[in-house]
Amino acid sequence: MEKSPIVKTVKKVMPAVVTITISKYLPILKNPFGQPPEEAKDVFLMPNEKKQIMVGGGSGFIVDSSGVILTNRHVIEDPKAKYVIVLEEKEYEVNVLAKDPINDVAVLKIDGKKLPTLKMGNSSKLELGETVIAIGNALGTFQNTVSRGVVSGLSREITASGNIDGKIQRLRGLIQTDAAINPGNSGGPLVNAKGEVIGINAAMIFGAENVGFAIPINTAKKDLQDIKKYGRIRCPFLGVRYLLLNKEIKEKYNLSNCEGALIISELAPDGQAIIPGSPAERVGLKEGDTIIKIENETVCQKNPVEDILQKLKVGQMVNVKIIRDKKEMDLKVEVGEK
Image (tube, rainbow, N blue to C red; front, side, top):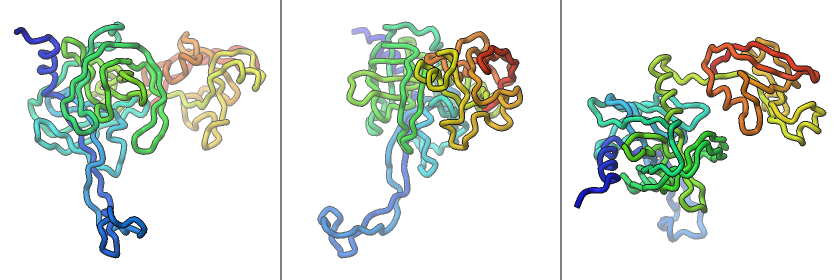
């Protein structure tokens, strides 16, 4: 019988998918009275020594034959952990080249030559219902797990909690899929029927069935281009802290409009609405100003300032329309680097 096209695609992709093991030195508990820990119910246990113990796992995939690997930032977020890449039962030490401070993407490097690689597709051309395949280290235990599904949604937005510090991060522009994504799948590739990577598996909804999300591969492409050209990931930066407007905020601050971004220090830990030395400070933006447009894109709940900035380049001169004292003003701002 002829093999399914999916089988052929998996065989093509699998050699370039890696497992990331996560281990830490943790104290081994010992009962000072000699009983084993499982029998000591009413006594205090004391740390005796430390031992390196595996605490989790993730996935990644090779995009350059010299050993450049893409994964999620949250997979390698713990600075106290040791990370090891496993490829075809061989272990490699990991060098972290960069972490994207806005998107959940990390770029790693291992020492290798002529390693298998995956071809990157174009995530901007995805269509609903398109067949996709997720591959990764499911639950940190089951390596090379394959699941099949379709593109269930595009440009999704979720609020995710990190594995290590529980820090909340808002992720936008995600690919939604019903291909099963489990803990440990994070960082693995989401590929199309041709075997081209169109996303990096990133998150799942606990308690829901077949609702997973992936970072579009075009986001990671930009990060790789920045690293090759500048040696780091460059993120466009304006330098303001703001609240996105709605009817309630408009009434609270007696504003003239319901859309835009109100520059305000209310939520800033250092009490500053304008970051010192930022492009916003250089052009004279002030607390109380409302940004309503950047490069003719309207700022609103569905299109916040950071989303618009992601489409711009560091050093680009852009038009910023604001409202100050209920009067519109136009400013020319050079986009900075975060």
